[in-house]
Length: 358
Ligand SMILES: NC(=O)c1ccc[n+]([C@@H]2O[C@H](COP(=O)([O-])OP(=O)(O)OC[C@H]3O[C@@H](n4cnc5c(N)ncnc54)[C@H](O)[C@@H]3O)[C@@H](O)[C@H]2O)c1
Ligand SMILES: [Zn+2]
Image (cartoon, rainbow, N blue to C red):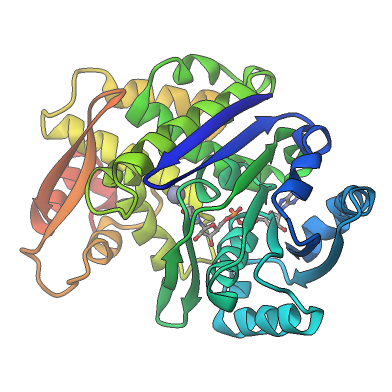
C-alpha cells in the first residue's frame, strides 16, 4: 500500500492506494464516520459486483448504512438524481456527523460529492473510486458537480474528501473500454509530468504489474497541481493536455461515439502534432507520445473532419479569429500553453493530414 497525503491550506487528507486496500484499511471508515452512520452512493453495476463486499465491511464495523443506488452512466449526474439523494439522506435520518461514501466511478464520485458538500451544508465525504479514471483523476482534487441539459458540470463546488481508498484490485472487473479510458488519463500524466511514469507503461503486462505505482504517480502529479492551484485558475490547466481537442470530439458526437479517454487519446495525438508542426516541440516528442499510447493499447486516429472539430474548441464558434489556448509539449514532461487562432490551427493541421480538412 502507498499513502499520499494531500495538503491544502487548513486541511489535509490521505489517499491510500493498493490492491486490497479496502479490506486492509476498512477500519478507517469507522474513524471517519464518528456518528456511526453512512450513506453509500453507488451505481447499479458497481453495487452488483462489489456491493456485497462493502456491505460485509460496513456490517463488520458496526456502521449503520443506507445504499442509494443510481443507474449507470452520465445521465445520473443530474439535478433530479441529486434531489433523490437528498430525499434518501433525509428519509434515512442522515445527520451532520454522519458520512457519505462514493463507491463507483467518476459519476458516483461527482454526484455523491456534490450531495455531501451541500446536504445540511456539508457532511464528511469518503471516496472509494472503482474505475481507473476515478482513481487517477476524478477522486483527486475536490471538484464535484452535476450536469445541466445545457452542459456538463455546470453546477458544482470544490469539496475535498476526508479520505480516499483507491483499491486497485477493484479495477479487475472493469470492461476493457473503461480500462483504456482511464489509461488515456495515465498517458496524459506521463506526457505532462514524465518522471518514471512512461517507463512503467511498457505494455499491458507491465501496466498490470505496476498498477499501484502508476496510480500513485498520477495522483501525486494531480495533487501537486491541486495544491498549487486548488480552484483551477492557472497551472492546473496543464492537466487539460489533449482535452481541448478531446472535449470537442466528445461534444461533436453528442457524447455517444467516444468515451472521455478515447476522445482525449485522439486529442493528445493532435496536440502533440500541433506542437511539432509549430516547431515548439523537441524532435521526436509526438512520436514518443504515440509510441507510449501504442504500448498502452490506446488508439488515437482522428476520423472526423477538422472543420467539424476545431470550431467546437472555443466558446466562440462564429468568430474564426478567436484564439484557443492549447496545452502543448516542449518535450515529454514539459507542457506549455500556446494560444492559436482557429484559422491558423486549421491550416497547420490540414497540411499534416489533408484528408481531414473538409
Ligand atoms: N471531478 C473531477 O475532477 C473529474 C475529473 C475527471 C472526470 N470527472 C467525471 O467523471 C465521470 C466519468 O467517470 P468514469 O469514467 O469513472 O465513469 P462512470 O462512473 O460512469 O463509470 C464507467 C462505467 O464503469 C462501470 N464501473 C465502475 N467501476 C467498475 C468496476 N470496478 N468494475 C466494472 N465496472 C465498473 C460503471 O458502472 C460505469 O458503467 C464524468 O462524469 C466526468 O465528468 C470528474
Ligand atoms: Zn480527463
